Image (cartoon, rainbow, N blue to C red):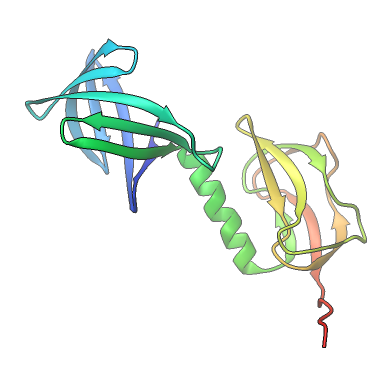
Length: 180
């Protein structure tokens, strides 16, 4: 499976697969033959492009629970990086687009099951307030209000199985009171 690898400000697509007993790494679309030997629980010997490199790979904590953090110690220093499932990246991008599009109808960004409704019809919600939790790909995804709004209609109930783009909640924008 492809993963999104981030080192500092750089983002790369990474995939490692075995075909006919040979290991291949696909780095940003370029296939590179790879020989990988696990020497110790966190220590590896890697031969890539005819060069041998020893690497110690350790897990590190990240603030974002969807990211898997690592530290690779090589001969020339240590590098911290994260790996993310590309489906989570797509979901985050889709949710960001939905926020930019404003209110109206909130739709499921991917197939899943409604675990918990956090609002009810007629309720006034603030921008960023959680609306519902959708379980998709064994992950709990929190859908949030893209603006201050009134929940005018709830199209689903807890336990509902949804397809992509299924309507979930309709929101109507509301003005917020400002102090003078």
